Image 1: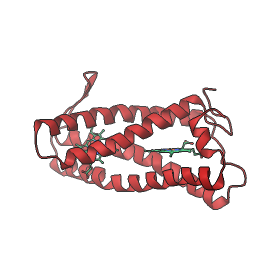
Image 2: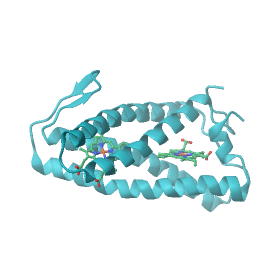
Image 3: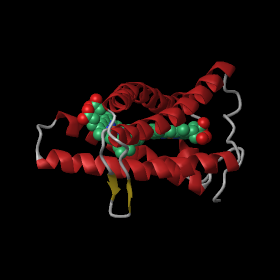
Image 4: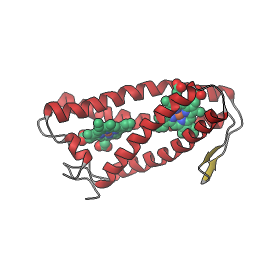
Length: 179
Ligand code: HEM
Ligand code: HEM
């Protein structure tokens, strides 16, 4: 029930998948929106929210990766061609890589930019001594990697619909409910 079986995702994996996915989609929308705003107190309030929420999502992502390593691996549906299995495996791996690159680059850009990161009054990630060069490198990573992430997310969502509507297998449903 809580853990995966070879053919179905457990409750914990499903909750983590959907909470993290929708949070990331929210972070992407807010990220682009806040960057396009004119300088104002509201803009910097949104920056603060984006950063604090991003740190919380990173902690969920780390928990998800640990959980994934301890849980059973869900097998692809039988009869899936080797090429598609490989594409799915690489796609999922890339999603995990981007799920780490985005928040870590964000945190590093802020810290090297000389900014503390207060997280909803719970704790503060302290700034490093200001280093413009490193701040720029992490900023470039953050605003460039996002396009790779968006491309993989779009393919991932396309793949989920391909399974559901074209192959008509249980790949989407097993991420939605207990099968
Ligand atoms: C999964 C997590 C995250 C995602 C998907 C994400 C996504 C984005 C996106 C789409 C943008 C707009 C990029 C652009 O304008 O080209 C952005 C900007 C930004 N993000 Fe994130 N972000 C995440 C986490 C974080 C974290 C944890 C921090 C810092 C603690 C952070 C700090 C920033 C900052 C400071 C900007 C503004 C950059 C600028 O003004 O050019 N982000 N983010
Ligand atoms: C930011 C958005 C998303 C991210 C980062 C993400 C990430 C992932 C990852 C890493 C896996 C592999 C799980 C594992 O470890 O086995 C996965 C599985 C899955 N995701 Fe997403 N996902 C996102 C959004 C979505 C959306 C919107 C849908 C549906 C339209 C979806 C449908 C699925 C399905 C059906 C699986 C199971 C695949 C299988 O059983 O082989 N995902 N997702």
